[in-house]
Image 1: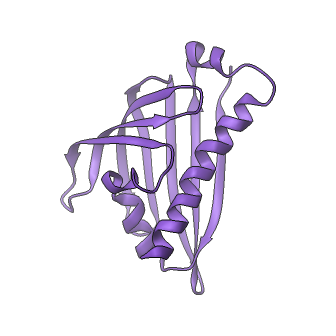
Image 2: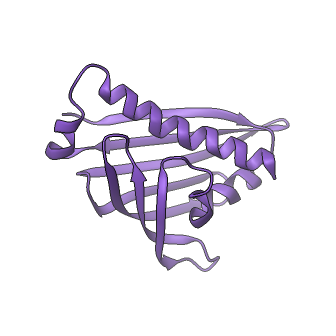
Image 3: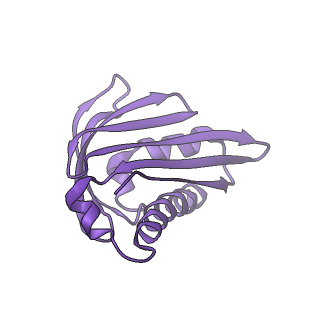
Length: 149
């Protein structure tokens, strides 16, 4: 099984700094990101944001646990990479670009499920279903959470 990659861009009626703040608050993301089940923060940066955290996510075919290392570029990008977990490799990011009164928020994922999880993803359209489930849950959830504030 090869890489599972994808991204979703959504327009949010809010400034980029609001979108960034909501996405960077990982512990509260459990309430709005439908696939995220639990977050345990191990280290924080000088602004109190998580830089090392273990996340438990519903990946449709099974629950996945991953320890992330997270980097922040103020108001424009949040990126993470797994340093250990249930999948072989995982990278992701949020990018935020202001466009007038809107922010274009893009959620991107690149996952190498490895051999064991790859076996669960066999079958017609299963990879597409899992990819869409993960991407849509994050992008749609962020939009709802930010615009509700």
